[in-house]
Image (cartoon, rainbow, N blue to C red):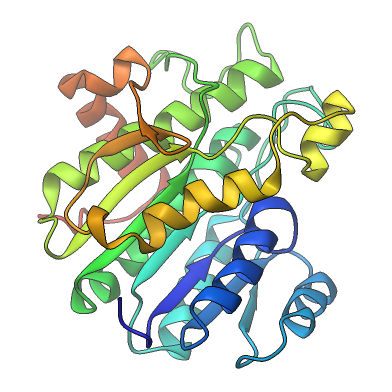
Length: 277
């Protein structure tokens, strides 16, 4: 593992993202950390709290707006000439604090699908050339065991909506696109893996919705850092992990036609060319 890695973590102002940033600062002090969040004050607080190493770069963007995702990618490219790891962690849960009712993004898409999936999909496409130039690089998608099959006839869940269903669909989409991307690019250039980091960690959205936690943040950090840093996984790609154990994702993730359908629909929704061809 090089001591000059550059690592981007989305959703780094709370919960797992914030804890992972602190962990990487202590275990990989030569790395350059790029931290994303929605609020500059909270970003500054996280960056100021990381001491003894170079101050992380902070970049603000609201992932509910695709133009801000594009701007975020531009700012990443402006801040660094290499990107070794992208940790796609930002997201909203199935209930509180955002609420259980159906919402829409600024682009008119179902909110959880937009924030949890489409934003990361677009950011990955935008940064993929930089990741490939930095080979060997890694993409780590923070997903969930909570998955729900995608209805391609009602992708934005205008019928039978629930926050849990929307969250589960967005997380399965994240895993499916990760599998598809892994099949399209050589593992020697970029590996792509997804994980359920831990169950009901004490994050803001878990405590707001459930009032209690099960696993610790440290458990989630250890599982995520394994995919970020473990040299034994340098060639491992296109997998889903439950914590540190390889696991089966939802059945739709292994349906090649469904993955292709999701990939093509996603390209149209975010208005991006297929940079894997």
